Image (tube, rainbow, N blue to C red; front, side, top):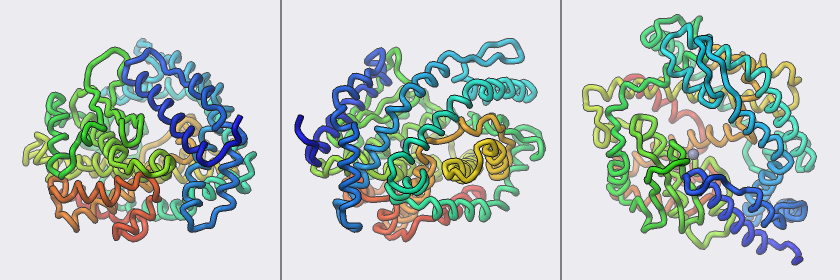
Length: 506
Ligand SMILES: [Zn+2]
């Protein structure tokens, strides 16, 4: 066998990513009964073993700090660590998936509910007594069966990463490889929670009283799920017009929504197709699938806009960038482009032009959106602070459930349950990617407004700018670098606080 070189790592890495993404696309879109991931892993084991990890580590250690080689090595190393960590965990993951598919919750009213469907069922249960009882039944099952599996997985993942010896512990090795400072982000989350506290204290009691008729002291997490399930605006977002309306929006901003055929809209109805929209980049930038089943409604539009943002980013990446800048990198970047599009659902001008809310309902819709955004952000800040403590090893794991409850309950005003402490965790700090994406998205929105006016979403100058300044670079740069490059300075939650204040006063 040939010795592994950077050239081979790139070529086979790309072939591997294409093969694995194609499997995922075919299975999730219902073209194929099941994905055959094991076969693909087997075929490419040469670039997924100890030798490849060693090569990436060596490149990472020897490259000059500010060089492009360092940038390449960073993304390749992170990718190798990610793919390799998932192998020793594969058996546990399979066990977890099998458990999740089989588990059922016994509702106090006699119904038997699939565990996977329990959150939706809880959110849809209007009778509060029954909703709380149903959640209690879910919690009991999580505590007994799901939490132990997740706890073991987190523990093993932490051990595996630390065994690689990149840095002293899990958190410092994450920081070393990704270049993301967890401490800086944690400071900024704590500041956001403080800065938005009074806004939240003003808003939450009113919403609780109006929507559920309860006091703040009674509010539980399952109540939050019920509030955000609200669907009284769904008629303003008809399913049969979703694709054409959103294509029109993208065309009006000067972008070809299909990227000259590189984005393939898979809209057909077929058995086995996931009901939520998703984006599968199979070859970047040449072959990107945008899969949807247009049901309509507020959340369907949000998901479609989000996935479209990903699709445009991949399909407009420069084809001659090296593999790692097209496929790998800081996922906060692609998430921020996706959020830039899904946040049009909080944009008065966009809603008036493309949705059917009408001027009389748009203000109340925006206030509800502001409430949801603030809740979601406060939850994510607390979640990230908790995950940082979890992975730090500084808090004994027996004390983590109490910490989880206090952080999440204080931030959101809804009482959380200790049983979810190991289940409600994004592995490998994906929460940090989302939070930075949120920040970058709000920076981009302000910059686009300054350059192309508040209706930038329909300005034919916007699209070409997005393509040449952002999308064409793939994921070569970090979220911080992009913010600085477009004139937004360093990432922070400040523009988000401004935006949420405006929404709540709509
Ligand atoms: Zn996304």
